[in-house]
Image (cartoon, rainbow over all chains, first blue to last red; front, side):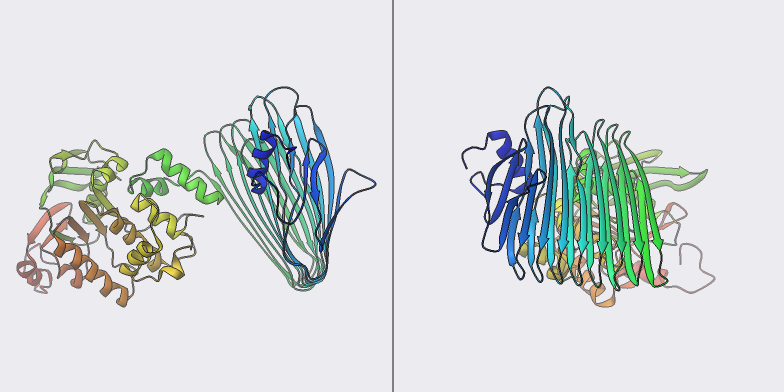
Length: 309
Length: 235
């Protein structure tokens, strides 16, 4: 694809490991509200929506080991991108979906990407969903990423969402809603690093409606500079199920974190657990690494890198 | 050579170390022993720079370590294994050992150092140095980080704590090997007879002072003495 400029290529590399030439398998590259390239495969069909901007992605039953790349980039100030992507994953399929969004701006008006994704997993389907968000360029210009995700997990299905936002995004509001069916499992791993005056809000609400369903939500965040993060999760058990959420945050400089985890058990066989810890890096951790020859700054970086890994 | 001169330290109105004077020659294995609360761990922390003394000097080959911070001391050749190892979220055994070595270790190097402390690399190398390890396992990782430093002076604070018998025997052999190479000095704080028995010299630290000291042949009978009529420093 020779219609990709350098800023877009750099963002694609960061969010989706783009090699500068193309993606292997099914893909759609979105940049500044337009598609720069698209490819379907025999098992994975990508079509434009007819009622809204965005895509319908159909993954055939039994598809195994294939990847789908759906990255989006904004490289122009003033762009306010809104996209609806629906993923229909057939029975017994087992695939990896790589999404993510990068914004690069140097001057001008705020730039924003709002991706609304819905996942419909049929019986026994398995999906690993990887989503990275980055912002690059001048930190004087506002870069906003507001993802919304809805998941509907059929019986025996499994969805693992691995999401990360490791700097450069001025503001983000992540909203995730889920419905988990019989023996289905939803795993969400979230990593967020905010710095300067950035803000990040995450809001999860998952209902476990099926017998023996499960949710595991793990959030790790670092708030540096004058940044602020708000974390809200609500795990609702409406059947015999297991739910676990873990929210750990490290504070540095003047960073602030507000965590509000909720558990709601509407069935006596719902087993729900929440763990949370917010605080600065333990002094003894810094000391240990310093006795290995690291400086205080190197030790703090190693601890934060490991924490967010 | 490590020379500790007139080292004193007080906390909360209590004298923890009281005018400690001690010389540790190159290539020797010295065991510090004595009753709990006698000041052994505080002395080890002073050497590593984790605590600062009120008075005195700690000289490593003539260089006064006291003004140096823990990073500078590590770079000057001091290794220190904490009595209670620190846990980390997200940092793996591999990460930790690479940081200790100051380079990316090969799989063979990782396996070798983990074998020295009685751990199987395949099972442990990618596990987190957090709640994924038992007390004994994380203790062995702690020891491995210090072994990798190849420090001119390595201080181990109660390395036997939490370690099973098989790994303990292995660890004693590791300390013996380091002792026999005679290319760096070891200070081991221990109450264990097996460790004390491989020391070139045993030093009793009691009530913040250096008490009885000497080679193992002369000290051992005194340490094991049960005679109530004996005066200090029999244990």
